[in-house]
Every structure is written in structure tokens, then in C-alpha cells.
Image 1: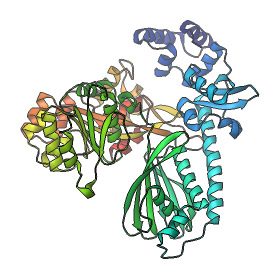
Image 2: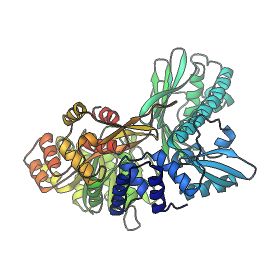
Image 3: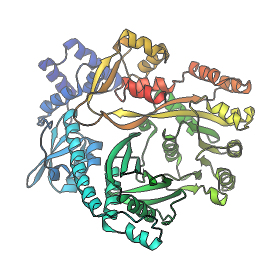
Image 4: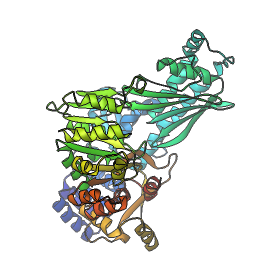
Length: 579
């Protein structure tokens, strides 16, 4: 279903969607940048993505369908699982005896069509549609799920009776944990969380009810409330799954277990904490099948991407990622290890906890209760003939010293630090009694990062006013950031800030207009000038000033470039960077 560029150009010209002069300029730009004409027209703002898809549908002779406000049978909709529908922007909306009609944004996604054909055993009839239609149809999954889960929760909760106060008999608690209503409620909560793509489940006992919240795209959201009688049974069930002590209600407990949900393995890390009205449970969901990340997919681009790749090709030294808890540091490290993981190298890690299991990588779990901390684990790892060592976190002087020594003695060391900026990693290591001359001899690269929510398909373009540009100029270097936008071909050469596009969610139906998250980064390489500043005891601001003069974009500036690409919003970047 390839679209001939000349045919598309002729059709757009005949339809009058784009002036002839703009069309000619876009064609020249497409030839120069080796892009498709349609992609260039959309990037330059000459045509909307939806208008382009309608035009492509006419050229290809494929029907264009509008699913907005259309009722779709739930059994037909769910013939394509929600994760597949969301990932590939493909919706099944009409079924006959021998065929299934699917609405798509990209009719060239043959892999998705082939996968669905094998899954449903029917002839697949692709139709083109627009972003709003896909978004509207995806909401139908959520509405149906809420209705389904709400019914199950209410039905099973009604059967439960409150546990008598002081019940501490292990046999009784185990029996309660295996009661069918409790099992169904916990299974339903887990299934709902997986389908909602939640990263954490919070189960919080209150005076008269149990509040359940999911963390989705980094933000906690109320999911449902359960009767107070369900609290003890749910706690007992989670303890059984995580192999924790059933009769221990006074002390915190940590554990983990695995489930198979929607065809994928999900590992859950459990933390139970005694609170006033019972036991609060937090479960972190880790998708074991989550692999195949790339640095580009995480949000690295341009000069920052080149610096990271260059650092990964070093055989010695240290590469650090920094940021607060939940900023994606571990995912960045795992992605780097995935890139480095070849048969020619021995990779060993010491982590707390092991979040993803990686084939051919020797991963060690920290166990402080028996004396196996980061320092002890790292001391042992270097005797295991490793080429690459990953330390989950540098928390203390001893771990910092051992990591530096490992980097000095012929190993590539990857680790994380809790600092707010890339330049802030230097004084943090100096505070841990690392000698400046050792630091500059080992640290090759420091990455600081945060996670911002990504815009979903429904968004509106707008441009900053002069007042808005002036306000932005107080936070970033306008000239340098605009130059980076031009160099990375995000905006055409000669563009001024008044013509740089920004985007915001177009509120439609449910949802906030965001879906998924991506990283914003600042990447500081250890140049000779920065090494000299470290030796002289320069401040964090001096180090950052020098790094910026060498081309480093701050997290805020990197976020602005993602705003101009329509990936996220200015408000979201400001919210995350100011936290």
C-alpha cells in the first residue's frame, strides 16, 4: 500500500489543501532531508495529520472511517487486546462471518495486520481513520473495564465479613486469604492495574473504607473504594502471594511475587507498612517482558545521544545517571546494559532491588540484613573478572570509593546518584570523600534526568506571545535553544521564536490528554576544561556554566525541544523541572 509521492503531491495540489508555493518548498525540503512529502508538510504545519490521512485514503482507495461517538460492540472491540490497540493505533470495529474491519492510523503497519490476522483467524480489512477516532475508541476499553471491574468488586465485597479484632492465628488468616471473594478482588485489582498501565498500586485502609489508587504516568489517581471489611482479607492475600508473615502486623514487611496477566509476566514488589487503620500496601509493577528499549526511544537525541554512545564505547571509567526517585534512572541503566550485553563481555550488577532480569547478566540482590550491602557486593564483584559493573546506587563513602577504584582498574562502571543536576554529581561525590584527582580520572559522563508525560494523539498547536517568549527567556537561553531546534531539524532554518510551534491537550471526553512518559535530559561530558574546574574546587554553577558553553542543553532546554516536536507540553516540562 505504498503511496507514490508524485501522485500524493498532485492530489494535494488539485484539492487546494496546500498553496502551490508551499507544496513546492515542501517537496524540495523532502528531497533534501530524504523524508516523505506528507511528513514534511505536517512538520511544517502546512497540513494536519488527519487531513493527510484522509488524502492518503483517497489516493490509496481505502475507505476512511470516523469512529467518534460510534457504538462498537465490546466483543468486537476486544478482539484486539487494548495494549496492542494502543501501541499500534488499530481498532477492530466491525465483524462479519469471514472478515474483521480495523481502523488504523498507518495502513502500512503490516506487522500489526499480520499479528491480528493470526490471532483472530479472519480476513483483515484495513480502514484509515484519524487521531480523534482512535482516542475515542480507546476510551471504550476503559469504560467497559470500569463497569466490569466495578461489578466484580461490589459483588465480591458484599460477601465479605469484617475480621474480628485481634485475629492473629496464622491458619485462620491463611484460610481468609484463600477465600474466593478475596482472591477475586485481588486478582481484579492486579488485572485492572496492568490494563491501565499503572506503575504502582496503593491500597490504603481508612476509617470507613479502603481506598485504592493507581500511579499512572507518574501521577496517583483514585481507582476505586472498597468496604472496610475487605482490608484484612486483601492484606492476608497479598502476604500469602509475597511469602510474608501472615501474623506480623506491627512491623513493615517487603516481598515480591510474579503473576501472568494478559499474556505477559509481571513482577510485583510489595511493601507493607502498619498505619493507624490497619496495613497500607504498595505494590510496584515491573513488566518482565519490557525489553528492547533504545536510547532514542527513551528521549535522547542530538549531541546528548552522541555523547552517551561515545561513553558506552569506553572500556574503563564511570558513567552516572542522576535524578530523584522515580525519574527513570534504572531504566536508562538497563537500556545501556542491553546495548553493551554481547557475548564478548562479562557484565555483573549489584542492585536493590533487581527490577528486570536480563539474560547473560550476573545480577546480585543486596541483602543488608545479612551484611550484603552495595559495598560488600561490589568488593566481591571485582573478583569475578567483570568487564562492566553496574552498581544500583552510590549511597555512601565506601561504595563511592570502591566504584572509583573499579573504574580505575580497567572496568566500565555504571551507577546512579541522587542529585538534581548533572553538575551536582561532582560535589556529591566530593562530599563522599572522593579525591578530586580520582574523580576527574574516572568519571566520563554524567546524565541528569526527569520523566514528563507525553501528549496523546489529540492536541492543539499554538504559538507563544511576545510576553510568553520573554517569560521563557528567564528560564532558558533562547538563542542557544533555538539554534539546537534548528540543528536537530525540529524547526526550519531561519525560524524565530514567534513561529516555533507548541502544543497542548485538546480536552475531549475522558482523560487529560496525556499518555505514557518520556525522559528529558542534560548530559555533561568530562572535558579537559571541566576537569580543571573540578581540580580547582569550582562550584556547581561554574561547572554547569562551562558545560553549557560546550553545548550541553539543560533538562529544561531539552524539554522545550520536545515541546516543539509535539511530544509534551510546556506546562508539563515546567511542572517536572521545578519539582
